Image 1 (cartoon, helix red, strand yellow):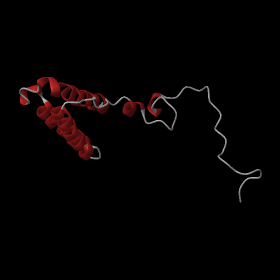
Image 2 (cartoon, rainbow, N blue to C red):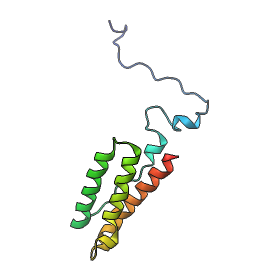
Image 3 (cartoon, helix red, strand yellow):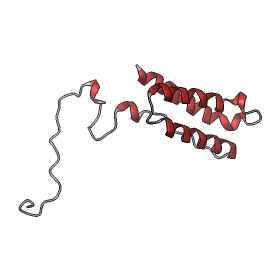
Image 4 (spheres, rainbow, N blue to C red):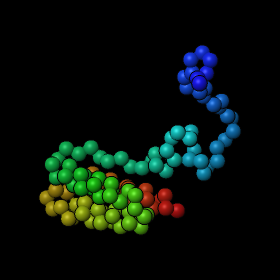
Length: 114
């Protein structure tokens, strides 16, 4: 049976003045951990070559998302080589935002590994 007066959602828990420990992620429980909230976001690209390269990057990252950290690091290393401006002659300016994104993801992974 429902509550008298019509049910509805339970009341919100009272706010606490206690400081959270650093291991809790530094925010409310409904937010993802701080480490995930700071993950770099994909760049906005409009050039066809950059869009296709970014699509490849996103597919590879999606496949590596659930894998072991070592496999994800290897995928990022391979993507850095694939996106490097030297590997895309004549398209350096177009692929640079994608390369910077992959580089930022790799640095993010390294920082969160510790």
